[in-house]
Image (cartoon, helix red, strand yellow):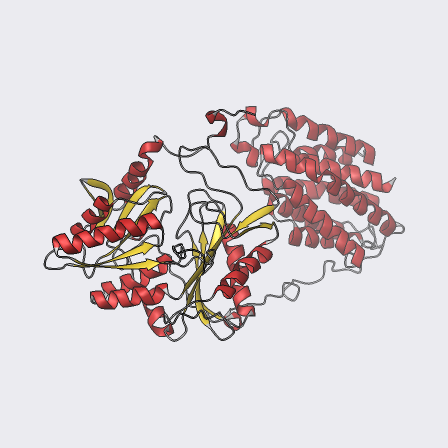
Length: 593
C-alpha cells in the first residue's frame, strides 16, 4: 500500500527541480541573442531593443512557449516567468515594466491570464508603476476558457491558449506604431471574441514531483485546465471525431460577447472564425493534425467559414497528453484581424497559418496509375493451368490465415528488435489479399497474372520495407512466369513456378542488399529458395524456412532496424520478418493439404 517517492517520481530532462526554471531560461537566452534578462530578477526576460508600446505578459512557468517564447518584435516586449505553475511576484513584474518603459515613453500594456494570483500580482505592479514611477500601464485580462460556467462564482473564466491571439494582434498594432489606446482597444476586442476548451488523456507532472494518479484508461477529461485542474466532466474514451464533437459542442453552446453587451452570442452558420489547435504538451504532431482535420470539418459542417487554422504548441502544460481548441470570431472585424494575424513577427514560437479557402478551394490532383501502366502483364495469351486455381486459392487463404494468427507475436517481437509495426503491416497485406481474392479481382487461374495481382495488393496495402520487398518478389515472379512458357503450350508448369520463386527471392536479395546471416526476412527466404532449387517438396521448403527463422534469435544484425541495436537487446528474440516468411510458407503448405 505504501509507495516510496522513488517509485512514483516521473522521469524528466531536468537537473535540480528547484533550479529548473533558471536552467530552461538559461537555454532560451543562450539560443536567442536578441533577448536579455534583468540581472536582479533573472526570471524576467525582455527584448534587447524595445520599440513601440511595450506588451508584457507572464505567469507560472510550464506553459512554454507561453509566454516567454513570444518575446520578439511584433509580439511581446517582455515576459515575467514565475515558478512552475506559480504566479510571478509584484517585484518581478514591476522590474519588467520599468525595464521596458521610461519617463519619456511611460506606456505599456499588461496581458494577463485570468487566474487570481496573476491578476492580483500584475494589478498591484501596474498600480505601483503608475503611482510611484509615473508610468501609464494598462491591463487587459483574458478569460477564454469555456470549461468555467458563466454564472459560477466571481473569478470568471480562466485564461488559456486563446491569450496568444491577443499577444499577436495587440503586438502587431504596437509594432505598427499604434498608441497605447489603440493597442488596448485591439487587445480587448480580441479577448472578447475568444472561446477555448481543452481535453486531456492524462494529468500533468510538475518537475521534481511524483506523477499524479493517471486518468482511467477508458476515459478522458473534458475541459481540464492548463494546470491539471479537473474539467467539466469525465467522458468515455472514443475516437478523435467523438472527442472533437464533445469539445466543440461545448464551445459553440458557450457563446461570446464581442460588444460587451451582457448577452452571449452563440456561433452559427455564416460566422467566420480562426482556429487554434494547441498541443497541451504531450500530444504528438501526428495526433494534432488528426484533431485539426476533425475540428475544421466540424465547423465547416456547421456552415461556419474557417479562415485560418493554427496548429502547434502555443500554450502547453508540461507533459499533459492533451489538446485544446481556441476559436477567434472574426465577424465584423475580419479584414482588420486577418491583417494583424498576418503581420510579421520574429517570434519563433508563433507559427503562421495560411488563409483557407474552404473545402471547395483545396487542391486535389488525380493520377490514374492503371491508365498510365505500360500494358498487359503478358505479351502472350496466358492459359490457365489445370487445377491451378483451386490449389492457388487454398494456398493464398492458408498463408493469409497464418499471418493473421501470428500478428500479435510479430508485433511483440518487432517491439523488441524493430519499430513495432511488423504485425500490423503483415496484417494489412493479408487482409487486402483476402479482399481481392474474395471479390474476384485477383485472377487465381493464371499464375503470371495472379503474381501481378498479389504485387498490386501488397504494394497498395502494406507499406514499409517488407511491403515493397514483397511487391518486388511478386513482380519478379510474374516476370519470370512470362518467360517460362513451355514449348508452344503457353502454359505455366511446376518447374516454371519453382523458377519464379527462386528468381523472386534473388530479386529481393539484390534489391535489399541483405543475405543469409543479416537477420532479415531473407534469412528465411534464401534457405527456402535453395531447397526449392534442389527439388525439395513443400514440407522441406517450410522446414528450412522455419529453422532459419528460429536461428535469427541468436544472430547479430547486419541489416534492417535491428542493426541499430546492441546484440544484448535483441538476443533471444527472432527476427519478425523472417518469422513472417516462415508463417506464410507454413500457411501455404497447410492450405494445400
